[in-house]
Length: 551
Ligand code: TEU
Image (tube, rainbow, N blue to C red):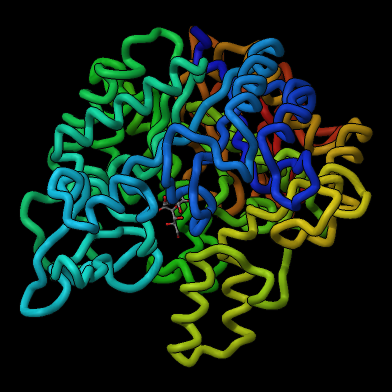
């Protein structure tokens, strides 16, 4: 069994990773071609987001057949070859399982909508209330969560897009189908699973209006969620020692995440939560512009680091994924200090207690693309939100600014491999435009520059393998009130590690808190982002985005 505290996961968004056949869309063969690159980076697991049969309305998170590969991405042979070649190079494959909903093109739904009672029970169909939607809930992608079906004179529930119908986990027949799917992929040699919005699967027994919100409190971390996860565990991956799992937990609580990830509970290996990625939401609203609230970011990290540690759970730690803007554009500086800030952000996250996840392109400092027209965007959530803001009469320029900083497409532009046309991603026009900085920011340049962001990530991964304290040490934050520095101590078997990160361009003083023994930290620098970072004196003037880890 790979020790997941010592492991690092790399996320591949196949559509945008590498196109092997020149149709402008990345594919499985493309991933296989780039395994040596991932091996050079040193990651243990490759999590691949959905490539199953899908109408691609939400880029594969709308699945029409869980057991078949969408021809857009290749064939089952391609997949089997990918697993084998990855294994030969010492890496394992982790798959993305979307079990909160299916596409309305899934056979189950097609039967359900025709009135087949057995399959209707797989979904959530409800009678109209006073001739209208059964509840007032709002979809994560805008509009009502209910879609009317005339033939049935009923509504079906969709927490996401109207083409993503929610599954009914209260139905045992449905649950058994899910176990078959997971076991099918285990038999293919898959060693990890990421479960999409898995904390939303337990819906309330009675569907009611949410008088104080959009409905999420009523279906998030629902009444039977722990029961369903234990059952999923027992019937599928729990039978194997060497499979790791991560649950994507939307708007979740610490108490629930402890239960999801404490090994005694036999649910999942670890959890993603997103609270730290909402610190640039004005009044909790994503489609707004706001500088990030640094003190709040630190407070959230501390709350989750300490809370999960005390509850004996395990965090997945990350800045980026396919739903998030690029971190260097968001919490760093994607201009003059791109290298310094990208390295600082990497260190800040990799030295936390938890398993780090790297999202494709993060390791070379890919930025938001700064598209200047709505026509450049492909994401369903972005387009819906654009239309809503338009309807609200918001000025086009402002909308484009908001979308430019918040859209999920910021993280979905093609991987920048080299400075050739289409950045070496494809030979044709890519399905979504490239970021125009690919001539400077690309893998080829990164590999050739020994001071690159890439080699900094590689070093962080090596350190995790070498130093047990990084994997297993306890976490304690220091300098809580400091307005520029995120600093923390890790401790393990009498050793201590101190991570200091200046999150700003301005210079700032770090002063060792008096309760810490100064002699502890004067010895060794494990990693930093300036060649001449000083050994730890009581007081250090940190340069722009300077980040130093002392052991
Ligand atoms: O995302 C779940 C989710 O709620 C988001 O991160 C969502 O994209 C964000 O709240 C929008 O502001 C997962 C997948 O990662 C995402 O790509 C899918 O679209 C979604 O589930 C539905 O399957």
